[in-house]
Image (cartoon, rainbow, N blue to C red; front, top):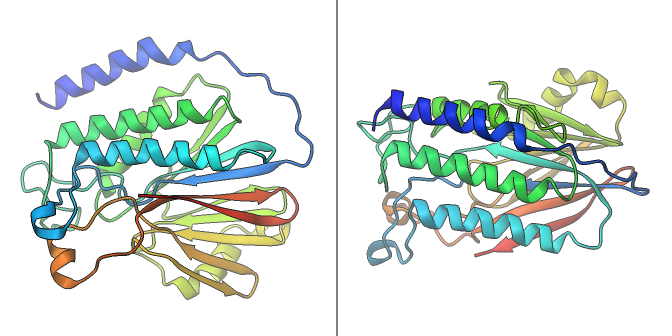
Length: 285
């Protein structure tokens, strides 16, 4: 299987599938809430062996955890009037960015499972499955965060997902290569970034500079970061910065260094239209 074969398959899939999404007409919801769902640092293609690290992880386990985690967040969000969903993609959804040397974008070697094209196609399908799970609940905004493991292939994947749903009127996309994204929901300004770039302490002022209109119209402001695979949360003046857990297991290098045993999870958040973040939802593995 080569690039041309995969490209033609993607084009055929997009042509045949995209027109099948009818527009969903929704009743207006009073006292609405935003559901944020963020499967962070999935690393499809990562290989972990229980014989060495105490736990197995491969491309199939990765896909299973994303689907289970998203469904778990949906189940836990019942009882809230959800009128919008923010789905955060990217953030090392793929483990490598080099098909021959099996390295990250910067050239760091990785233990891998599956071929590069298998990883890509599984990541494509899991995003499609997730969005199709969410669309019956509320309109979706898909935000892409470029990341250090898959800076190129992650961008290509996000563009494929945007193309796949291009005729769907119930989903919008922000798939630019910008490292920091902002999304406004009522009185909330929600920033997202992978977390391998700007320092955490600089993120609030960067948000104010890069999204001045949204900043001026909101009171509750948050930045969700990734990359570290464990929970960190700090309140700054006017902005809360929080890192998210990862559903991926520990590989050989991290086990050897002792970077292990943080809770593995897919996380979500509930934001009230006027009152900001009112709930955290966690699906643990």
